[in-house]
Length: 140
Length: 140
DNA sequence: CTGTATCCTTAGGGATACTG
DNA sequence: CAGTATCCCTAAGGATACAG
Image (cartoon, rainbow over all chains, first blue to last red):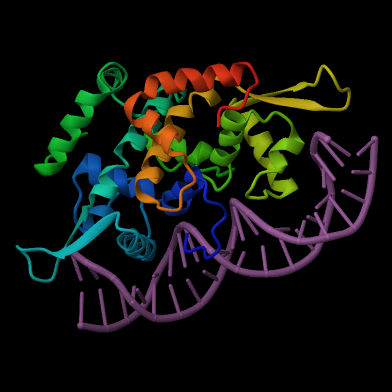
């Protein structure tokens, strides 16, 4: 994060430099699966991100066009954060991570029904998740 | 890495705790795509991992059953590191990262032919990569 | 509610010397 | 070649106080 010197032009390395920190993918998860949109919602995650880190990470993600920030039409002093297409396109990575963890971590909190659909009908699942995201519903 | 307190039972978080550091996925990349097997080969990556970090990371990966270590049948004093099934199963995550980086990073060093196959025929590509891995050939 | 600003701690990582 | 052992340093992250 915020590193100046790029280690290499490897695509894996590029991904790591953009979202390979301790918090970014959890935030993306909250955007995609929990339909979160505001600072307060994002801060209230199970993992308890510190407020300064959250602000820093949102700025970073904005800078890299993963999210964009706009004034909340309802409330004057509030902002809405939303994933860009670049951010939404991280979904396949998250899904593969979920599949892997589901397979290898006994503790993982993935519902079996979700995991099953992930294994048998991934494309349909993606469509459902994205449509929930568009409508502001919660996908999981 | 080496954290004691688990942040949550979220599957994304599990993945991050196992391989969400700066080096692990690059090492997995070298195992899968470059057919690397020995300490020396792994150390000679483009990104120049430090020797102590490499040793530490290999121990971590062994501990979490991502790789296993065995004596090299050819050379007495040498060891061979190989991915377990759990490690091999990280391939889909790598592939999605490559696809994403290829789409969004102009600098990325992914051959267009590879990217095209990744988008149009992912399953076939996986099979090819895994068969190259099994035969000790280099996949990319 | 949405952030800044500080202060502080620590884990992660780089460099390099050294060993069987 | 395949690692250990040190030393050091910085960036990343936690806690908390404060401000618009």
